[in-house]
Each structure stands twice: as C-alpha cells, then as structure tokens.
Length: 113
Length: 113
Image (cartoon, rainbow over all chains, first blue to last red; front, top):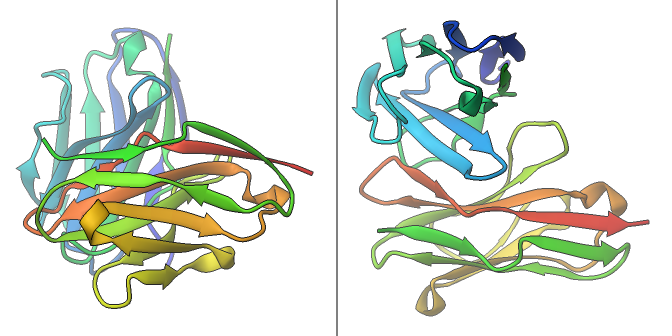
C-alpha cells in the first residue's frame, strides 16, 4: 500500500489567501484525522472523521478552518483566509477502527507570509 | 481532562548509552498506548504499541516499552542507542471509548557519535 498521501508537501502563501490541503487515506481505513504540529503547541488534533462523517471538530482553531471528506478516499482541510500564525506542518492520518494504530502521511509544511 | 506527560523534553546521549524516556497518562479507563518516532524532516512512524497482554512490548529498531498500569506509565527503553536514533519521540494514548489519539509533548533525543 502507498500509505497516507498528502499534497502539497510544501505550501508558501501570503496572508489572506485560501489554502487547501489534501489527503488520501490508506484504502480500507474508516477513520481519518487531521493534525497540526508547531514548536509551541506540539501535535494537536484538529478534526477526525469516521466513515466520511466528521465526529469531533473541537480542535479546529476557528471558523477560518474547515474540513471535508466527500468520499472514503479523499479529504481536504481548508484555511480561508490564511494568517501567519497558521504556519505549521499539517499531518493527515488514517486508521482501521478508531482505537487502532494511526498511520501518518508525510505532512504539508505551510508557511503563511 | 485526559493528558499525556513526557518527563524529558530534550535528552542528549553518547552512542551505546542506555535510553529510558518516561511517559505517564491521566485516565482511569482502558487505553491503547503508542510510541511514535519522528526523524528530522519526516513524518511520524510507529515504534511500538500496547493494546493488551504482555505489558513488555518490543518494537522496531531494538526499542521496547513497559506498561505499568498501577503507575499509569508506558516508558520507552533501548539498551544501546545509535547516532541514527536521533529523533523526536512521542508517547500517545487512545482512550477506549473514543478515537482520539492524545499525544505527549515529545522528547527530542540527540545521540552524539
């Protein structure tokens, strides 16, 4: 299996622009997670889905962040408008059943100028 | 609130030294426990996990961890570290009734050749 796939790997944008991060989970996994990693706050869970349905979005920082999972093989995390404090590495992970091992993608390194 | 605490933020060792990284969690129910490693510039990879059974679990690259339920601990050990073990190590817990993976703040391990 190719593992969790994320794109783009790097994104540099200007403040106020819309940013869309993409994730393809491991085939057959029914849970998908979005995390953000920063030096100051470490790894934070933003939102997770089960069978394409958002289960817990309490970690989403504010309304500028939104996530969708239109089907079992694709999810997006959107930031609109982006701000410099959104600069971080965003990881997507998937698992087979929620309490099983989560497998992480390579991450998207976002820099908002 | 449930939390995971890693005792050491930054550890520096010489090659061949023994390693022990502490991890404690605060939750009275059933948990699944994980150690992940993140090599510089890379994504998180699973080192080892504990779900049930023998509380001493062995992972990849010579790592092992011991689950002590009475102490709410899951410490990571390696008898002899190598320069290639330089990385950040994360302890994580999934509560049995949720799919949320709660991470510790991470420990940066630097191994001097």
